[in-house]
Image (cartoon, rainbow, N blue to C red; front, side, top):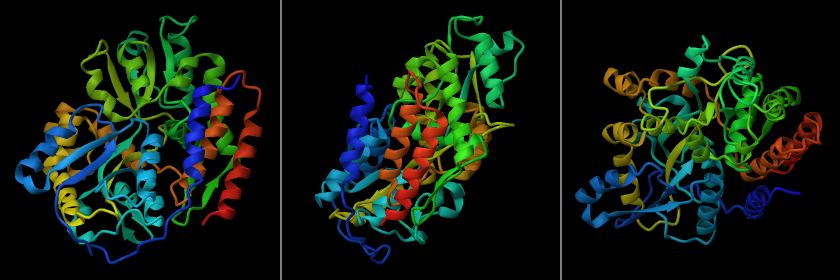
Length: 426
């Protein structure tokens, strides 16, 4: 029987993929006008840190007050709602909080405006995150937060068994099988990431492929490249976990929040998640019992997916001058510090990762900086929606029991589909 959750998610993606892109608006960067109250639209604020930051702006700019409009937690649903608004030419949204992989698509469609580089201190930002905001040589957004996946692990249980945190997938597999599940020493799940059929599945698959020495990458013109053998190796890393049981079947229903809760409630030995899960874990039953390290690879630390949020100005906003000033305020150094200290989200200012006081409070910062610098973007490009649909459907099919289709067939089919998208893009 077909998984209804997967079917629903893929239907949403398919419907939004059928939308034709708009005409590119490549006007002069910074050629904007209009002031007044703003609407800032972004994904759900799961740590309740945003409103106090907005209150600071609103107190100083009573005529340009910002209203926060929260969209669903899942990135796919956020994108679908934003696209529906922008395709209608609505001026309801002024500032858009975009997943870093949407920059090229939104710019190519003419939904956001180009920005003047000189108005932002980009030279003080981490370079990989700046690259996510650039498309065809123009700056289309300003990085607000970065992200790279981390491996959360139960330090207390590994220490008790005399084990070190895993650096490779084989070490992860061995330790998970030794300490978790019915045959292990503890009644606890082995490993989980985000394996529901949504954007998180693409992230986890891309990281597995990168850990196998491969890549899924879209260049600036939208070309997707994928080495089939290395992609198969990456898929097999995940598939073996489900078949052998050290990745619990329940993980097929996990997004970020479900996997975060499973780990902090003591139901997982290892969990892949973003840095924002660290803060809540320090106030949970596993407080003082866990630590983080880089994601595993084949022969050493692997490469995570570069995540984060970029702030862009809607091409239909009638208050673009105010929107730009708000973005300047929201991405300045003091607010970047608050982004970390109050929201537990990775900032984009490089110097914050080397601040001794912050490292004392957030001991994972050095590991996180290494992870961000080693991370790679997902297959971004103007046709990202079609690419993400192809990847999500293929990987979900492979990981869902009873595992009837071989990984060779899944990857061959996916490679063919991506090649066809390359030929027909634009």
